[in-house]
Amino acid sequence: MAHPFKAHRDNRVRVALFVLFLFALAANALALTLVRYPYLQNVSETSVVIVWTTDEPGDSLVEYGLTAEYGSNATGDSATLTHVVTLEDLLPDTVYYYRVRTGSALSNGDTFKTANGSDNPNFKMVAFGDSGDCTLLFAGLAQRLLGLRINTLAPDLLIHTGDIIYPNGEQWGYDRCYFPIYRDTIKSRPLFPSPGNHDYRSPSFLMPYLENFYVPENIENPEHAKRYYSFNYGNAHFTAVDSELPDGGVANVDQRRWLEKDLAENVDAVWKFVFFHRPPYSSGDAGSSLSVRNVIAPLAEQYNVDMVFTGHDHDYERTRPILNNEASDNGVIYIVTGGGGALLSRVGSSSWTAFSGSFYHVAEVKVENQTLTLEPVEIDDRRRDHYTLVKGTLTGNVTNTRGDVVPNAALTVLLRDRPRAVMNTLADGSFYFNLAEGTYDLRAAAPGCQTLTQTGLAITGSAESSVRVVLVCP
Image (cartoon, rainbow, N blue to C red; front, side, top):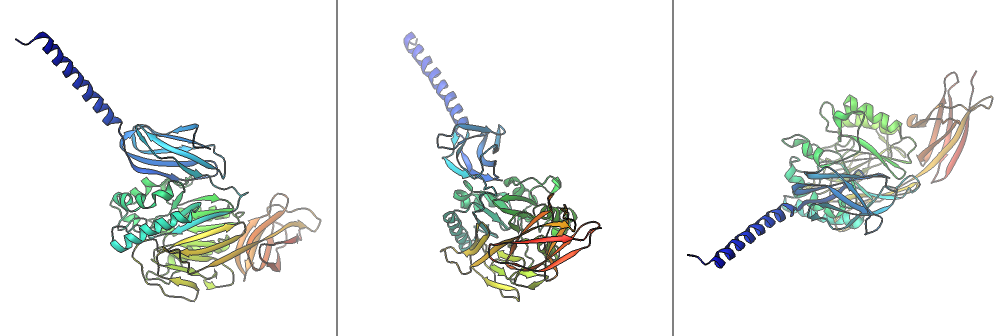
């Protein structure tokens, strides 16, 4: 017969072991792991989206504030693997501290900066494309080294011209060839993407791309959500286009209508950038896409777009300003920046080529008020090309012969008889255009008035030129 004291002691041991087992189960349930580090999306002047992933479902919490003490919290959906939290009512052009928390999983403290408003026109951008080929030895090394270079450049924002993941845009590719490589950059700086042809090749079509990126809403065409969109940063307007969209690409009726409306509604931006994958002008192996050119070029010229960024060809090319399909002293500049990490391709030269080369790079763009500088930056910080664009301002007002202001008069800036910028006069009859250096004509028209064209209006440097337009109206 067992001793009573010994039996009682054995029971206590069993109970203790059972309690420890329950604690172990609970601890294991709480011991979540960050499998995808926080990254920023859709940064605006007053908001930001923060996304991260854990290995087990849990709550979504972001602590943030103007100091490392944080002080504010925001939450998202609970019991989810992918955590998406939007911070709102933020101050423009301001650095915030933040960290994310899901159960026991806690990120290190990081920072982000909200977008500049138009009162701070200075910013730095990095554009690149054709990057996600990290499974290949040499290309993978190039991509990783470029990822380090991007981080040292410390841009305010990044745009991607497509083919984010090779060979076919699958989710595992993002886990290996995107998030780990750019982690230290995208945790504190937003990247705005556009899809490439390889991104569409996923067995689930474009689903991994759509699931990983949270870009500005396209309210007008929700069925094309995340495929094309636009946003402002500082004194610049950015328009992302989907050149691979089924049913027509850039010629898709809905997308083309949206694009023209977007450009027309943002004529007051000092700088206008459009980015997508397939190039209208390229001297590389794939060459120019004429179907893209036929849609993009006329709109870019008419609405005073400064630069169009593309990829597809794995090289770098900057065109001379192009107007009416010809090189000009003034016009739209097209950049191929497809040297982001995939195997390089050959590139030649065309009549409109200003510079071209086959090398790994990202394109660094610095905007300081009305001056823009562009350089392709290589892994070792070499910069083979340098381009500067300075914009001046043409201002004035439109009246009739009686001295009455003419609101909503249609104004068209012409360069060699081609539309270069359009806008309507404001309620007080005033207008302003931000234009690259050159000599322009200005055509003014209003209902019931004679159309007037003033010629030889010179824009030099960052100066302001003023003109008075008097229409003859019965």
